[in-house]
Amino acid sequence: MKKNIFLNRKWLVLALVIPIFSACSKDFLDVVPIDRIPKEQFYKTEADLTAAVYGIYAAQRNTFTSWELALYNLEETRSDNTNQNYGRQSEHRAVDNFSEEAGNTSITGFWASAYDCINLCNAILDRAPAIAMDETRKNQMMSEALFIRAHMYFLLVKDYGGIPLRLHETGSFANPDLARASVDDVYKQIISDLQTASTTLPPSYSGTGVGRATSYAAYALLGKVQLQKGDKPAAVTALRKVVFAGTPYSLLTNYADIWAPGTKNSSESIFELQFLPPLNGCPFWNFFAPPALNVPGGINGGTSPNTPTLSLINSFEAGDTRFAASIAYDPTGRPYILKFKDAGVKSGNDANTNFPILRYADAKLMLAEALGESSEAYGLINDVRDRAHLGPISAATPGTFIDKLMHERRVEFAFECQRWHDLLRLDQAKVISIMNAHLAQEFPSLNITIDAHDLLAPLPNTEGQTNTLVVQNPGYVPF
Figure 1 (cartoon, rainbow, N blue to C red):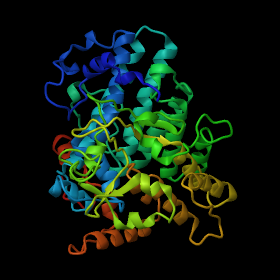
Figure 2: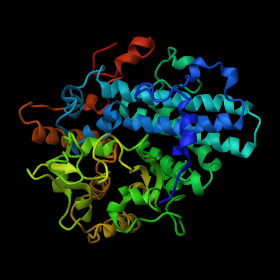
Figure 3: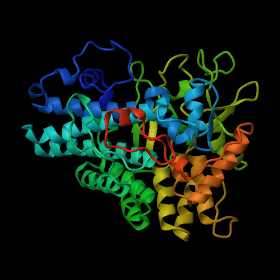
Figure 4: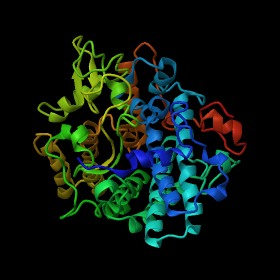
């Protein structure tokens, strides 16, 4: 296992000076938020900038974990992969069955935490140029801010469409009135940020620096952005910077090892969220685990509120070793999500596992999708299938190329916040058909169907109440 610096205790204290933890426990540390510190007292030294950079990694992590995994609810629960059964029934289940409104905590919570993170990135980008320090190190840290800002805007634009594009720090986390930028303009900014980051970030880190954004991570994210945007040639160009002979990345032999505590930041990891208990353990197992009373390795009080759907379970081919690493059954026969399991955890959010954002398997399958049906694309898909102990597929295998590729992505990245946005790359009518079949199977008594407006979430009412220039997405109650 490789160690990483920014969960080190001394840097944790420094990072917490930055006011990023909107969902953290009260009085975690008796520190003064930066909006109460005169600005002339901060961003003066390299140590200040370093602390701020570690703060944005923590803020990025917070975006995935706060508000009872609000982002997971929007990316995975919203898809045909999982159901929300317990917990916040009226809130999370509303996202699950497309009845959510603008005040839903998943909608408001993810938006708030993402823009908090963006504001911290903007503060670094605005203030770092005036700090006297080595220019190479300064540019690297500014590029880390560009990478994380791009990641946040990418998540936002996929879920909400056009959004306010804030590129400079706002004091005291105020949100000045700002109209929604077009989807195209948001993508242009994301691409610009990642292009700069990809040429400035180092290819790797050693020792305690492992886990920070690299040039490879920037290229991989750029490829994902271009693919989502529909520019496949540009996606190919970016992804070939990651997938090539002699790349430092490789698929782990054992699929289950990707989430094992002992294989953090492995050869398959291009970028992952860093967790380290007891102060910053991974909360996902807490969200998936059954009660310890029923299952060895479960947690005290666990209810496994988020469970895999029957259609996902049936998507795994016979002999696919990914199934046993992803899904298990409790003694009552109820399925639960096995990924992110830490058998040593019995309560709380203290799993010693990381959460993957970009994996080498993802880079391979994205490149295959961008290339389109070809021998090279099937070779990339078959690399991933071979690890799962499955035979190769080809053009002669029944089904369209995109259906075969999406099947592979579904079972490879189940529960990793990929499925919903993968679906959105399909023809709109096909997405709606897939989701309506899912809703009919999982909610037969509700008679739910969706249409095109449901493919975007509503903007949160908190934004509408404070920003007079934004308008709501079509199909939702106007502000």
